[in-house]
Length: 351
Ligand code: SF4
Image (cartoon, rainbow, N blue to C red):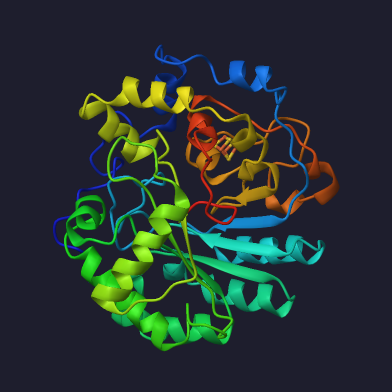
């Protein structure tokens, strides 16, 4: 059940922006903002260092049933990159040697990976908190008819993307009919107890601007979302996080094609906030790619920016001590994490 009017991925369209090297070249050639190193130096945060690892983020691949316009993964139905059982086992072995409290599983639509449920079971069996980055429409796929029950029975926190509480804005970004499916997915989760008082089943939403804007203040937009979703659709949730669209992948293409690229980079740079920079997620996260390569975050993963030399580069060599205080690789896309109050979605990103 794939959405009918989906734009194809950059890769399928053979876009010049499909290679991450071209995205990086454009980002580094930006003239509308200083190099990201400059404000980081002024904030005495350069080079940026990790402060430990409390989030073990596994990106299980790029397969997705949607093709959202802002997707930083360039995910879609035709993507074939997918974490194998061998690599999933390496992740579990590495996790078992640590006391990292949170496992954050993302994609693509992570639930479509055949090893997703096994990973959840293993991590929960070790007593770790597990988060699932869910696009909501995946819950309605015939192959996933028991997904909601599975997530609830393992007490997985759900972090669900919903750009807006109205259909037109959400469908403009995520594809025709996605809003309606998202409402059905949220109602299904509420019936299972997600987002309901005292159930302990956490349902958080993530919204990102529909266009070349910075996100609004989180508290105000959360109040609006709660009021509108409750009144129009009877939907409850726990918290709403706002994230800034990162100037990479399909959102970078949108910025360039709409003539907004330079203005957007300038806006992000003008909104640089040292407090947000000090708390960026890469400082407490390790990000694992579908093939087991280690990264500082999911954005660096999509730009093929691996960890700096001298620390383990693959999950098979995972060494908590060596990675705890590693140097973090930053480039101009990092302005997306440090603008305004920063991107705050519970320690990770959603696709
Ligand atoms: S893009 Fe990644 S490396 Fe850069 S600041 Fe954000 S989380 Fe850190």
